[in-house]
Image 1: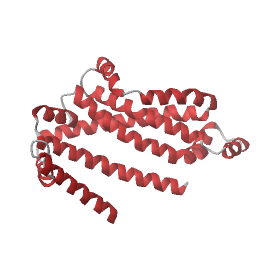
Image 2 (image 1 turned 30 degrees about the vertical axis):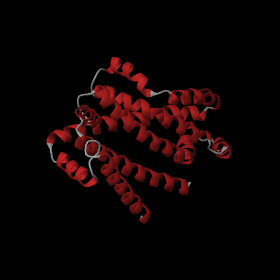
Image 3 (image 1 turned 45 degrees about the vertical axis):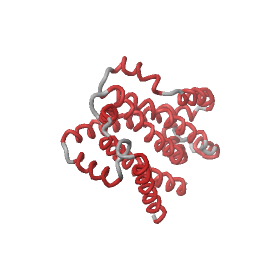
Image 4 (image 1 turned 135 degrees about the vertical axis):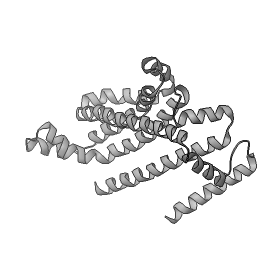
Length: 241
């Protein structure tokens, strides 16, 4: 706890020092940024952008998890399929997703569906890779025991594979969360007329430093808070396993 406080104070001091070095044309100081963010949170238009991003991100994250697990779990249970799918997934993960955005726009058009699709594209592959890896790491002794007990495939998955692979799967969900958020914001920045990404891109075009800093601060606070919670849950799962 104390180390976290020191880290936050240190980051604020660095932020203030950068403001003093770069000036108001590039940054706004921490206190002014926090106050301006509070002002934005009191306006209805800003909440419209915030809720639009929250809706797109939540749907994209749900799709990333569902499709990622739907890909990773079956392939992980089949050794030959996993050996074929793993290099394909890793290669797809290495492709810069921004090159796919024109295709996403052609398919879904400008608006909420494109943002959801672009966010899900970023998150689904790491979820699938970690889920597949988690299943493949399940002890063969446990699987032989399941066969000896004549458990069905569904019972084996629910009682043995899922609990054993859950820590690895949760790590994939944690990474998928971050990448899905990035993808959703990128989708808003380049092909949307509403949302925090659009607001940020518009502020960059207008060189509106207070809005840029306030939106960035809000996104950092949200991402950091959720990441800390997910990391704590991940560590607890690994200790319990």
